[in-house]
Amino acid sequence: MNRRQLLTVAATASLAGCSGLGANGESSQLSLTVQNERADPVTVQVVVVDDEGTTYEDESDQIDSGVARAFEVTVGAEGRHEVTVTGEDWRGQLAWNAGTCALFDGTVSVTDESVEVASECTDTR
Image (cartoon, rainbow, N blue to C red; front, side, top):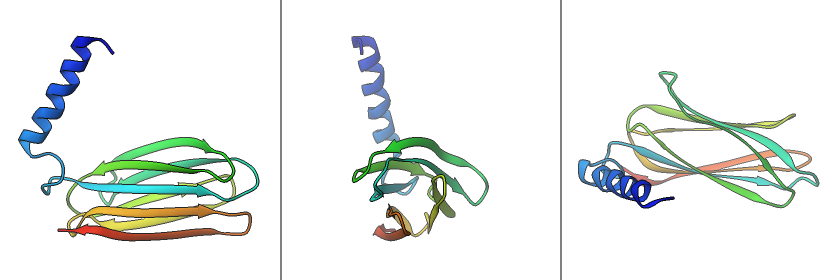
């Protein structure tokens, strides 16, 4: 990254902090961990949407056996949001209300026999 790009990124981050973007109620944050406990790698598709159909994340990644991958997604501050994690032969879903939850933690663990999901709001409004 050259100096001009670095200054642009720094200025944008500074303005975001000054304008109130972030943890003051104008957004909600998803912290998602996808754990592959299968014997082989899995390809996962992570999609985060709100109840109005806005897509905040649509990402695919391969996760090796025994490895976890973290996804951090900033979404709107109001309404229901849902994250869907899918693989070739499995699916896991979690949902939260951004109006009452500023930070939502979720975990999707994939084994050969099952898909386990767990979640909690770690920072309520």
